[in-house]
Image 1 (spheres, helix red, strand yellow):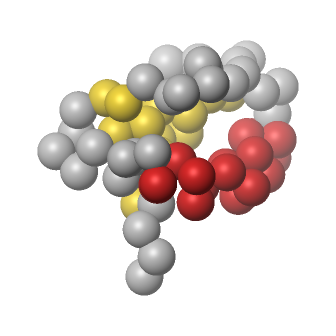
Image 2 (cartoon, rainbow, N blue to C red; image 1 turned 30 degrees about the horizontal axis):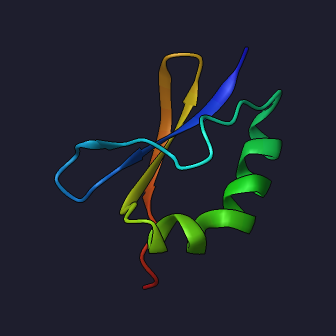
Image 3 (cartoon, rainbow, N blue to C red; image 1 turned 90 degrees about the vertical axis):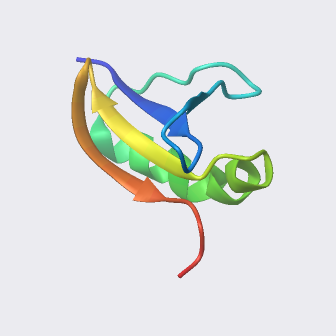
Length: 66
């Protein structure tokens, strides 16, 4: 299984990450990575991050501070 993040604008359109697509061996690794990089992604114009396990959507979340 491969874990990845899909990045989206507020309208649902996909945003390509500046550094390329990261792949992770586990959910915890993916969540740690997004926790360390979400502010930069938001500055780059990403509004939402969607966690994928292979092609299955696990969950999505906003990158805007509440």
